[in-house]
Image (cartoon, rainbow, N blue to C red; front, side, top):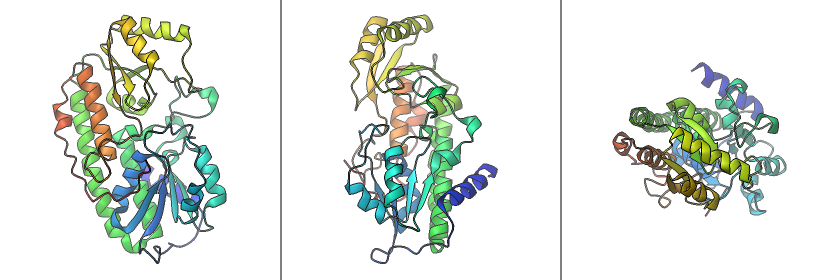
Length: 327
């Protein structure tokens, strides 16, 4: 609760002063813009039917290199609030927002509010020398709950009449995220070797919470291919640590990671998703919860663990998700 109070205060200060802005006169709802699909889902879960939530980053797109098209400026110009992950993830979008948002619109950096600087993680793909920490905080359920808490606080500031709705929606989201957290802690205890080698370095905060170790990521800091020396080192590390499986992306095929799997004689699982939600918009699994549950089950089962606790986490959405997920 201390961190929540500090985070909300910080984000409101960053966003500027002023009283709550009434919802859009035409739709009767707040106009909310977000970036990647998992964040769009979290924000939409809290906003419910009091806001029109529009994502800017198409699913299955590399969010680190995404350049917003000219059409994004129109969405930003109509926005009451822009929710960014922050931590350096969406700099081109942030730069466009600086010249496109209306005078009273707010910009909220969720990751910057959820973490203090001493909690930043720097690693293979996000070295300290680069100046940007690993931004993938939403893969860690307790931090996703903090995203939702900050979202509820900001939306209440903008739309005080919706305070009760936002509190109720936050409670529903938190209940489901807590259930996922408990299930992941249970499932983790059944995994003999909790070591991750993945295509993309998206699980640093997750690993810290659940006692896993990220031993490497194929997508290096410049988002290019690893060198032959780096590949050889990873193969040796996999053999030495007896890792039974390595993980690729369903959206971004990695011949290099497939090669590493063959040479290290381990299973190569290429069904993880980064920012691409499973299912179709409107379906229960097309959500942050559905994405995280699918990825967690995939990792646990491939590494020899029991994922039944995760399978039992219900996916029925707390509210209909009518957010606009660009394809």
